[in-house]
Length: 190
Image (tube, rainbow, N blue to C red; front, side, top):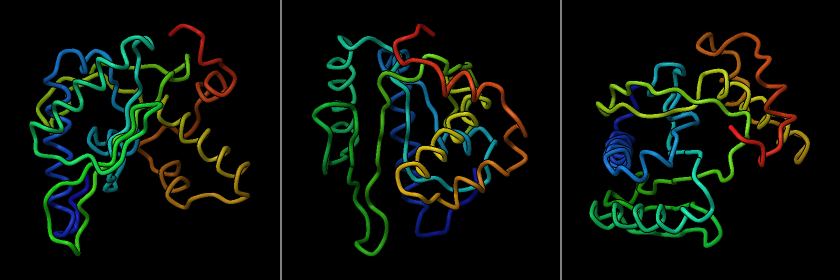
């Protein structure tokens, strides 16, 4: 992962503490599969500092309450304050102690159900010294393409960071996986 600016070092430390705690919890380690920009950066696939934690929830709907309870126990144990959360899904904005002029909120976003065509690998995440399950590089690339197209459809514009991520040599130049992802139903089996 890219070294953050000094004012972001505390944020990075909190991300690592929280991510380590999540993967030390057996229930969460089997239900939450890491994805997104922070994941790509931590695995050395993307050269930028990312500020939130994104996951796919691969369990059943009936397991969501257990996952929510486990996450909230971790937040409490680490001294994180839930600033806001979603009652319908697993999304949290967590406040940690820090100087007022610096970043002090960490977002966790969990997708349920994930696209059926998402693929995952077990990987060594050396930044937190854990073996975790994460989206494959090709799945991340395909999801970045989907996000780019969806944003353009909704807003008529795109985010520059999405183009930058697609141009990086750390992602494949092409991906047929994108087409499977774009046209699959969330209800299809993995």
